[in-house]
Image (cartoon, rainbow, N blue to C red; front, side, top):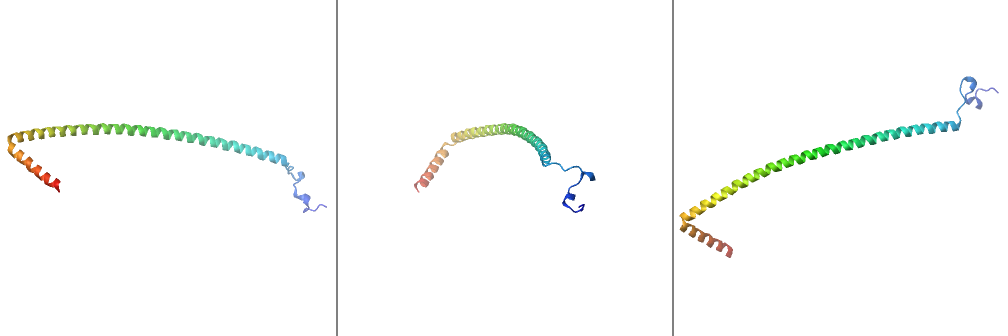
Length: 132
């Protein structure tokens, strides 16, 4: 029964130069070992990605902090500049109001009759408007 197509001929023989097929336990052990190596590699990759993410987050935080500090400094400078402008405007407005007050007093002293009659006329008009 040396039929080349028999079921015994499906397994490689050691006479033909093939090694004996590994046992199921040995194959399972090799799979466990390969899986363990793959898990170690994936763990190392995950740790590396985690470290990179932490570095990126720290870099982003530092950049954001620097930008906030720059914005705060810029806002402070602009606020100081606007304050100076407002103080100058207030000073000019106050001077003009004092000049107007002084001019109005001088006009009233020079023309008292016109001012009294003008005040009476304005009072009369306001009274008419309020009645309605």
